[in-house]
Length: 456
Image 1 (tube, rainbow, N blue to C red):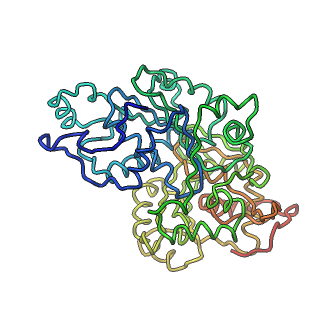
Image 2: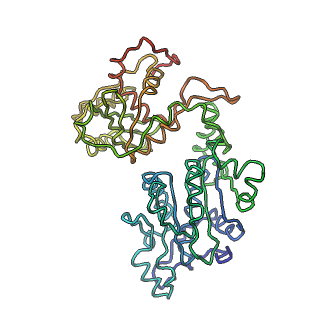
Image 3: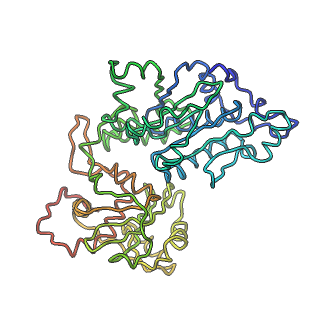
């Protein structure tokens, strides 16, 4: 990629006379990343490793920088689902744009799902005679944007959370970074190595053979782990290390950045979840409820869940916050979210009963809410009952989809799978247990055998 500046200089974007000289927030860590680009002779870059290593952040920053210093770029960032792209990916780009001081230069156009130069920035480019820079864009999309995938003509393609993609999906877009360009057309992949059965392990990580030798010769694999990120707080690293005592699989993947096998320990049948647009007319369902999990240690979640005559679950709407309640998020914030997003449906509300004061706060706000009964074996019995049902989910309920696919039993270091669920990635599942308590009580429990003797 010889056309890229070896030493990055923000003055290459705009001069001081134009009034858009970028804020000098480009730190040494990202400068080192950018300087490495000149050394990359490969056309496929695969960033993988544990959580918090900064792989997605680094790639996002690199793409933004390339948009700002090289003409003629049509960059495409693709997630498995459009809803994931419109939330997580867009948020990541906005964060990095802000960190780099480029808010007055780059803007998000929601209608076209692109990051582009602002009108004022384009005017400055033109005044500098840089007409070749004006139309640079970064498009954010999902694999379910079928028509846009077919019409894609990119200089660079980024596939985020690559282990969510199938080989057929990768193959269908791997040749679409074909737009004529003075630069090498790149494919950039990012992933946590969470599934050792995924085709990417065979192609990029297993010993070279006749099937993978060409792709490995044309690729560079970059491992990025949390302990290697100088800007990650020690407390965050320590939390990831604690997975060793919680579940060795997640410790292996999220802290060590090593390939793990989740297939045998997954709790729910993937084939029992259907993601499609669902009717929001509650009269079409047997009944519906709103469930709340407060998120004292994890995410705070609100779900609107409906049921059919067979008690199958329909996840119609979700709200969640990554901020934990009390420390970063007040109970009033959650009440406000309920009032603005869920009160209109007029459904009964059930919430986590572990903190009665929180329930009382909601009642004081005029909300009729009941605490979940829970009791002996509530988790094991709830899971068994949920496993017997089918789930239907609106496409924009992305957190539920992620947790349904990743909810698993604990794994020890020697690979033994216990019958106790890991108490992470479980917040929406907990809500499903709360809202189905009445349904489960009405069911015949004669055939139910508790998996574990835990209380919640």
